[in-house]
Image 1 (spheres, rainbow, N blue to C red):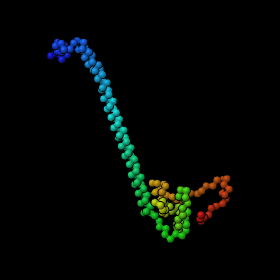
Image 2: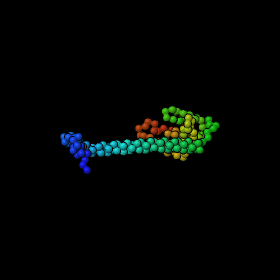
Image 3: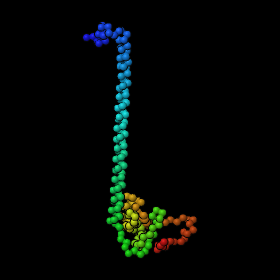
Image 4: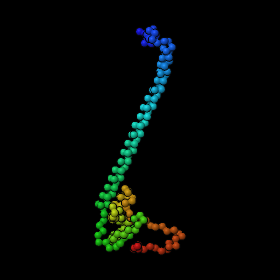
Length: 178
């Protein structure tokens, strides 16, 4: 069987020049075909990159949600530790002043609690808008989770005084209240 082009040439419908022109266009089209494959590969590459970016965004969002849930769980643990370990301070008539950030706050405690606060056996923790007294051990556990919740935890470390300090000879009394 002869090709359609040969049949058209024999029938006289198409001349030889036109047949050569059609062959030339076919060859050009065949040569340009591999470029089409590269374009298809490029489109696939873009699609693959888009999927990778989408997966990375999903992982990042997942990490953020996980961090938020961990933070919420830690906050719940802190609240539970404070409510379980708080020390009742009802009937206190001795004011105890402490700093919370840049503000000076005052709570009324008993004389025994005042002494224990000064010695570092009891700490003050922030709970909502108020303050609660806690044993030092519970306060250290809370500090491991969030150090900003514990407002005051005195330590028993000795204060070192420099040689050039003009007040080095004066000792601060233990019962000093401010």
